Amino acid sequence: MKILVTGSNGQLGTELVNRYFDRSNDELFVGDLPDIDITSELSIASTFASIAPDVVINCAAWTAVDAAEEKESSAFTVNAEGPAILATYCARTGARLVQISTDYVFGGDASEPYREDSQPGPITAYGRTKLAGENFVRELLPDNHLVIRTAWLYSPTGHNFVKTIIKAQRDRETLSVVTDQIGQPTSASDLADQIVTLLDTYSGPGIFHGTNSGVTSWFEFARAIMSEIGEDPERILPTDSSSYVQLAPRPAYSVLGHQGWAAVGMEPMRDWRIALHEAMPEIMLAIE
Ligand SMILES: NC(=O)c1ccc[n+]([C@@H]2O[C@H](COP(=O)([O-])OP(=O)(O)OC[C@H]3O[C@@H](n4cnc5c(N)ncnc54)[C@H](OP(=O)(O)O)[C@@H]3O)[C@@H](O)[C@H]2O)c1
Image (cartoon, rainbow, N blue to C red; front, top):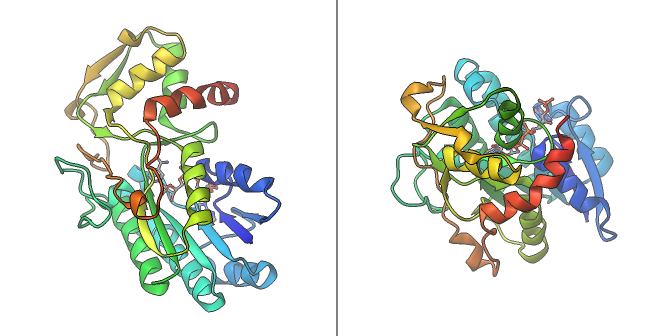
């Protein structure tokens, strides 16, 4: 199969490229700015004409959550119009589209994990644009889409919370991290494995929640990172969201349920602590 990964230089894109690179049955094509721009119909038309992909995995996104509050139309172009262009070309050619989405499509005020079919209700510009992207993809490709929602992603590539904590603790004796935002730290490596297995085993459409299992706060996550690098976790001090105000409101409870995997004969992704432990050596190597 011909697999096209868009946003291939990002955290998840890089992991997917690594997975498909060596597979003899698949032919991998990679695309990121400036070579492939998902918001340009011209760029996508010529990509489809030259590659004719069987599967497109769209990891390209506007991921700057706070900046999206001030530039929602720019975020909409990347997070909603880009996937719509990809879906249009997939519909014309019979290709499958995997659209990566987010827990931010929900309001984050639940008291139990969001199901795949729970009613979305984004409270941020980023969440609204990502939900619009999901909806375009589902409408334009009713039988040939996969929407994978993820959250709290980290990897050796790019910027993420794990790397931020490791670097920040080098300069400061203590770091204050919020205890009142709950979610699911997710290894991009694990998510890439889950997506590859899903594509190998299931040919239908659907929404899936691609987050590691277990639930924690940013505070506990930071302490776990400190333990992993052999530093004293007590150097992470508790604070709450009222003392760390950001432009985009952060969800208090942003936990995704994993009911969808059983329906396709797959297990949910493993516990976040095991995934973090396994990911740490490569992350440390990537930190200068
Ligand atoms: N990171 C998280 O914690 C998180 C949480 C929930 C959901 N997600 C979703 O997971 C997916 C992957 O996230 P990630 O963390 O891997 O993202 P990332 O590291 O920010 O990578 C996104 C990639 O897309 C590229 N890109 C941006 N605009 C593009 C365009 N118009 N055409 C082609 N490529 C473009 C970016 O290039 P530039 O760097 O040059 O802009 C970047 O290489 C996204 O859909 C994101 O919304 C992420």
